[in-house]
Length: 167
Image 1: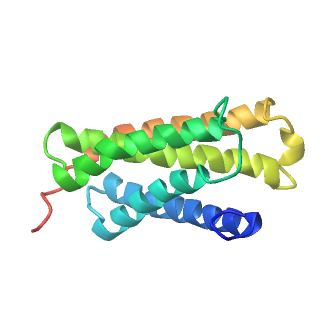
Image 2 (image 1 turned 180 degrees about the horizontal axis):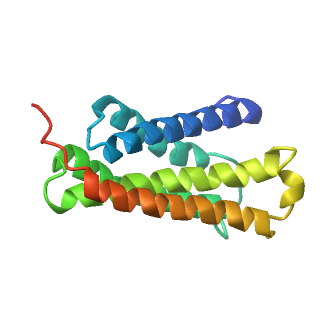
């Protein structure tokens, strides 16, 4: 049991938090592409992204060697620190704007990467296409996601120049 819950209940909670992070992150990204701040959605996205990583560490898994999911969690939490600082402390001023954009889209990318991994493991029609996740369909899907996020990051850096937050 994790925190008094069954592993199935905890897994469901973790998945729901992850999906909230992905959906809210998509809304925040759309705002970036349109040059607008989404204050409420940004807070939901950053909190849900942090909770996704934190809850991921609570699953009963070996600590050594670290699993890929644990490494992704460490990277995500590390990227969230300057992302949150850039948005909430430095109000996207100067270099903090692109640090925020890069960090936000990196953490969203990591969540979507894991979503693709989980889809190939759990979705019945995808599982046979890449049963070991070393097959071409898996690499193509992850490649498309990677290229999409690279493009979104470049576009967001060009377009997202919001006014300072209102006090």
